[in-house]
Length: 118
Image (tube, rainbow, N blue to C red):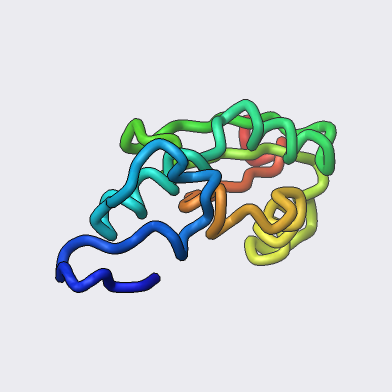
């Protein structure tokens, strides 16, 4: 980003044009907010990605603050049987194909085996 001389306003010429074709100047905070909104994943997309890799998964996703960026997910699957919590979470992270930290900003995971869910 190039500072245009105004301490709280940046030129968008150095930012991806697809995000900002509608305006000339944004504060850095506004840029982060708009970018997060454009990149956010909805719960249906998260469910689709997980189900693609873990077909038997029962998935419950809650939007924690209503911004489509901070979720809590409870995932139940037979694939988790005999696996440590770390291994279970690695299975889910692999299913999300690198979206964590990008389009999917925050995801709190709870993984459950069907036998423990009764």
